[in-house]
Amino acid sequence: MQLVFYFNQSRCTGCYACVVACKDWHDIPPGPTSFRRVVITEHGHYPQIAVRFISTACHHCDKPLCISACPAGAISKRSQDGIVVVDSELCLGRESCGGACRMACPYDAPQFGAEPNARMQKCDLCCDRWAEGKKPICVEACPMRALDAGDRHTLESHYGGVKEGGQS
Image 1 (tube, rainbow, N blue to C red):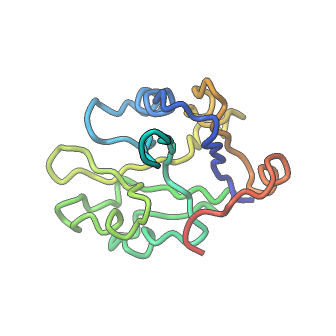
Image 2 (image 1 turned 180 degrees about the vertical axis):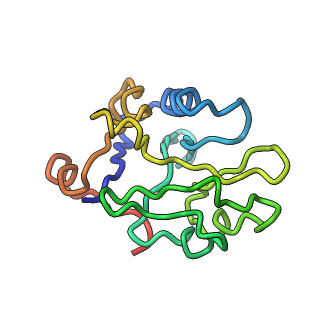
């Protein structure tokens, strides 16, 4: 089984409820560290313009580049559900390894706080909530239901041709 996020861009209004809920749930202090981000893109030329929002987090890749980049072996992929997790006790910290995991990740998922030699943190698909039978907090917070999460095959059957993310 591989747990993944599903995102319907046509439903997202850029309200940032997913970002705020995630930061609150994980006690992330105000500032640039954020496990979930909303990227704003603009398209077209006046008078035909469009603004689109993309809510993104760790993609929990099939073959995560961050795992092989970590010199301490602090990042792993859980076999039971495919969630990519970090052991902060094993992480050497940003200054000690130069943030190798973040540089390797094409999605900027690994995050480091502002404190000296901060240890890597990232979205863990709210694995604590999955253990309680609940979906990630960002999914539950989305008022437009633009986000969902679940087993890849279940989401594909429900939503249709879900594009696979991550490094294959």
